[in-house]
Length: 229
Image (cartoon, rainbow, N blue to C red; front, side):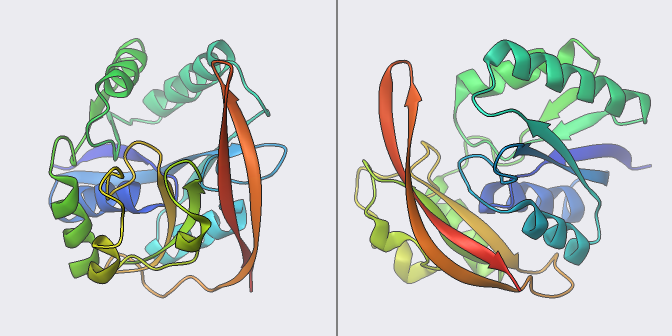
């Protein structure tokens, strides 16, 4: 008998591949794609994907998206409280597990596990400690289509924005960059693939630059605006 789960979903490649594993290889029924949305901009933080495109991903995949709207500059304490309330609700709905697309960030994994443990939920990481080059190749060879929509401008030039993931692109990343962007080097929007019933349509807009401050340090990012058709 399959277990009920939700997948922590961003619209990008890693959470999509984790969802792929949950649907195709693990004994789970995915009840929701759980997405956090910036309330001010109505977009996925750090990806910049409009919430409407996230909804359309879910419609194509055939799984409801559940969105948690976070205020701008949300504190860690407030974030934890909001997530705690949401996960308690998921537990009441019969959810047993939350699936994540994290690959090797130990502190983030521990935070997620500790957070879920307080409400009696389990965290699962199907991509954990896999070779990121192998994961990149697997994602492309499975037939997924994804576009780079966000880059850390300290790690990658904005020329990478708008490029589709491909085996050719794999060899274009600088050696200092993790090819899956696991250190925040870049983020993607997945618009087609084996779990999609049809491609998600969108138009490419302008490039927007924005800086984020973390622990007193400023990090510049470039975003490719995607527009709904």
